[in-house]
Image (cartoon, rainbow, N blue to C red):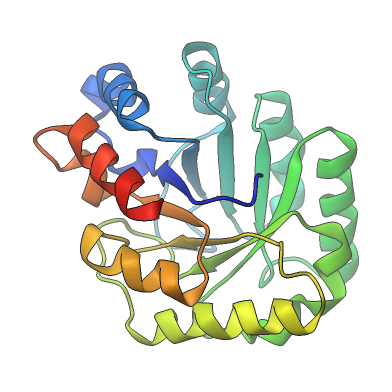
Length: 223
């Protein structure tokens, strides 16, 4: 994942009946990659997309697909999503043991995809330290994962700033930070100033009457 400011629309908020049309509009507006939320009903109280959806999407888009595994046992899902064409796979640090997580991160990298880790809002930033050599970016949840349409937790903006400071202190300032949850045009500027690089936006993009124009607004703001 390039270290530049990117818009990543979350397909969880798209209209399934108009998915291809809405994706085309978002791409036209400057979307850089797709965020695909994978939920198993155990790690989070919701169900969403499976590998077959990822494989189908990979056939109709040229943009990378970022598979965010909000699942209790990511070891069961990593290989199916890699095989389905995911360009990057995000694991939650709160799931498997450190040994299993490291193994999975290395498996993702060996497959030619980008490995990443995500933290829930209450998970200590310092818990990332053992994994830093094995990840390409960090996904900071700015809401509790599980449902789209939530409002950003205001304290998470400072948490992004603290994460950027943490990475600077570790000598890896170039590592991108992705933010996911309640991202809107109204708070994206503050998240940008805090050190965020990749902005996952769901309802803020797909609830707009003109999706392409909304994406263009985000892209202008992030320049």
